[in-house]
Image 1 (spheres, rainbow, N blue to C red):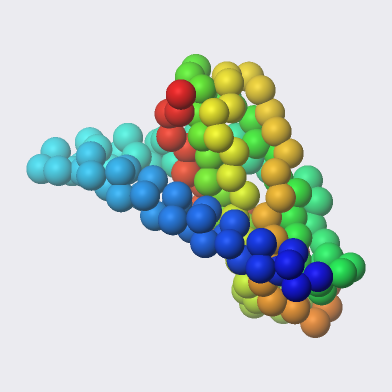
Image 2: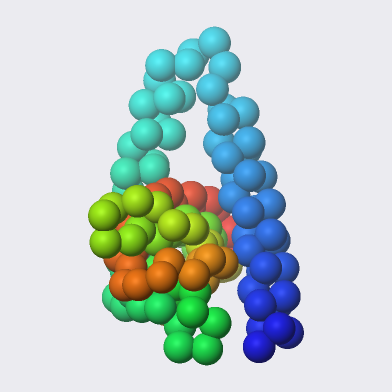
Length: 139
């Protein structure tokens, strides 16, 4: 169980780094023509959000941490990679923890199931919400 928790934490750290890099690259395009670039970024974010759905949300029996299964479907015309941030909320709607699911080099029209794992015991049932999606062109 301890090995799984350490591996999960390492995966979350790597995914968070990838998310930060993708955000920096996306924001780098917002120069003096900021409004047009910002609108394009907003449109891309909205389109990427449409590529993701939570198919399962539960508390892991072994770790007592929340877990989500996420279906990512590439609706773009090019091969894309995704970083998906999931917010895990308790019965009152308070965010308990978050997790990250990632998919690399997903061809157009293809889908994949990925897992996001939280790192805190919610002390009860949870709901899962897509907090953010970053999609970027990949090889």
